[in-house]
Amino acid sequence: MSLSLLQKHLAYWMLFNEMKGVTTSSILDLLNRYGGLESAFLAYIRSKDALPIRVVKDRGVQSWERLAALYLRAVQTAERDQVRILTAIGKGYPKRLMKIPNMPPTLFVRGNADALNAQKAVAIVGTRKPSAYGRKKAYQIAHGLAKSGYVIISGLAFGIDTQAHLGALDAQGTTVAVLASYVCNIVPKSNQDIAERILSLNGAIASEYPPGTKPTRDKFVYRNRLIAALTDATIIVEGYLRSGTRHQASYSRELHRRIFVVSPDDRQDPQAELPLYLERRGAEAIESANDFLEAMESTKGDGIEGSKVRM
Image 1 (cartoon, one colour):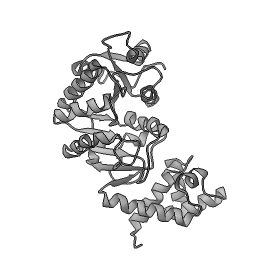
Image 2 (cartoon, rainbow, N blue to C red):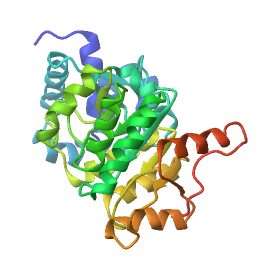
Image 3 (cartoon, one colour):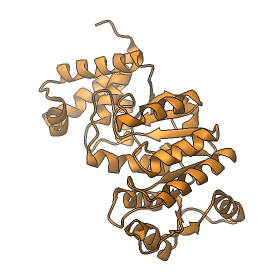
Image 4 (tube, rainbow, N blue to C red):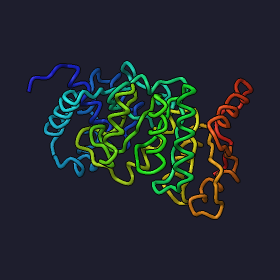
């Protein structure tokens, strides 16, 4: 296998990315100490006297040589798929992600990576089983904000996510999908056409997970922190009180992003639970894209930063 120094460099970034308990700052410390990622990796596993259990379990390999070869092939797979691999010290890595405590060491991107560095970006998320009202509001708000120059960020899931992406696309705007799987593994498969439209309109599909990664519940929850981090604010349309969408609100609060909710049409609908809960705790209620724009404009430059929501 003939590989360049850059490919080997990316492979070890990817490998560190999947090792539980290893942060970007600790990788940089090891890199500074040992002068190269391969040397840093060998020093790390020797200090632990074994490969991390998570890597052995997930990848089914027992030696570092085989593990390194696996990730070197993953780099080649990404290159064949025309997927960019961004590292925390490389060009194009999203600036907003560099400011969060659990930033991913590597990020995989299909399409326009610059969309991840947009000056104005908003997340629109919610339940996978929305009401007709919820679908309409997600679409209309995304459409209006995309027309106003916002990049719409969501997770390409059924329901509210789908409507948010469609609203932005129909406005000829830019939208970014953040996945809980490898960027070429679109889940659900029925949204493959939407994924292609996102790419065709200068948007992007991003993930921290390498080739071969399958989505799991914990990955869906964890990717929500990236959706929150890449934005100025999160708009929650509908959701149960105990749902994955609540994790999105929690990450937004932890990262000091503003939280908005769409006022429910039927306050007795179970899907109104989360918006009403968040509104009682300080989230800003809106009904349209204009409401959001006015709220953002009214607090520009007055020192208000982040969410005031109490979770």
